[in-house]
Image (tube, rainbow, N blue to C red; front, side, top):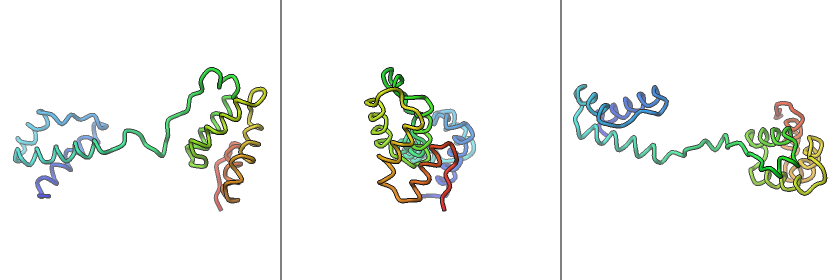
Length: 151
């Protein structure tokens, strides 16, 4: 890649970062870059490169999955504190989304409304045996409301 194109890509990305990603790769920016002395074909190559990279990016961050909302029947069976704890466990990477769904499904078929004691029991019986001792301790620590400590 030519140095001029690299500089253009860098400038475009800086402007996008300054505008929180809302920068339009349109005629206004193209005109500014041409007035700054850049070649039209170099500008086009830089725009194609940046727009191609933006299209390849995921629109969400897998490290922070979206919050799971309960439907009406689930909300009758599951205490909001249980859901908050499950979300926290998932966002910390201690349980997978499929494990969260298995736990929620189990709570729906249980008698009464699931509380934090039920969650503790379900974690220790359903999820804990699949983990090593350190991960089990982290699960229990977070479900008790503390920050996980790894040794």
